[in-house]
Amino acid sequence: MPTTVRITRDPLDAQAVRALEEAVTTRSDGGLVTFQGVVRDNARGKQVRSLEYDAYIEMAEQQMAQIAAEVEARWEDSTVAMVHRIGGLEIGECSVVVAVACPHRAEAFEACRYAIDTLKSTVPIWKKEIYTDGEEWVEG
Amino acid sequence: MPTTVRITRDPLDAQAVRALEEAVTTRSDGGLVTFQGVVRDNARGKQVRSLEYDAYIEMAEQQMAQIAAEVEARWEDSTVAMVHRIGGLEIGECSVVVAVACPHRAEAFEACRYAIDTLKSTVPIWKKEIYTDGEEWVEG
Amino acid sequence: MRVHVRYFAALREKAGKDADELAVPDGATVSQARAALIERYPQLASTLAGCAAAVNRAYASAETALSEGDELVFIPPLGGG
Amino acid sequence: MRVHVRYFAALREKAGKDADELAVPDGATVSQARAALIERYPQLASTLAGCAAAVNRAYASAETALSEGDELVFIPPLGGG
Image (cartoon, rainbow over the protein chains, first blue to last red):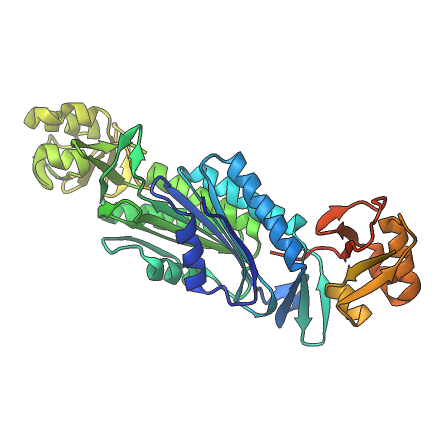
């Protein structure tokens, strides 16, 4: 199970997402669940113009590898890839991809959900929302 | 919300999946969950060489539209696309794609899971497993 | 009256065709049509025993009364996904 | 002894730099290092109040004792995803 975890400054475009999906899917997998975080045009009632992500890259990648290992131990025969983008992102761009393949779909959904939830609550990545009239580092 | 539901004989390749993802994602969506069913090389302890799917196309598309409408009513601001392939499929090929975009990720996971579960239990599509030494129409 | 029967999956293979016109008494139910079909194609009996039914593209119970020209489909256990 | 401090997100902007060397007494804890940092950069106080800490790339409690050359990072509320 070739686990891919990475912080990147490159766009998470269709090819990047596809490459992760292919990396996790083996011949015995029947279900592939992919989560993509997308930059929304609003948050907490404010119009968002763009986002900027920062990360403590070395620790973030270590934490992500730990999450992937935990997922692959907990959901038998699951394979996980996760990549988070940092730098400036426009509305509609993808900030994070978590792809999980499993023999059966129920596990793939659960494992993918667990991976992104745990990433959000433990991986040192930060987000600044840029509004038309200011900017703010925000939680969540 | 432009709902896409379709039975197709064309491969559900990377471009097809991407087109569905783009069709469901709006500027106010923050989470996109995509489920892809993949042809596995084994089932019930048997080696599977390939699959053949059949569908009662007119009814299947009607049922899928109904599921999509139900999902979009139940999860506010969700948008759903689902396409199921029929005909002969090789190991590793994609049989079904369900893409759901929502403002927040929890809803996207739940809605996508509900859509594929309901598709499997209500949409008139059938699967024949082809083994090295025979073939069988199977449930599930 | 006549109803239009379409076959899918295992039923299509066992019937050796995609569709049929089936003559049934006026007001016949899905259940009576199923019996008429088994009479004509005994080889479908075991498969039909495990089938649901759809009339005009909507699931229908065994007691549903058919009308002239209805599209009747017996639905083997599903395998989509 | 000296520890290596790195700044991210709001702390980087308020400190106006990416990293620092911070002198602390031998055996100082994360909590003592935080106090030393606030003394040097009062403008970080409010942000540091809401921060977790990591030592050598692993989360650490306020009581964790530091060693010469450790990498110390204060972690503002997370925003990944």
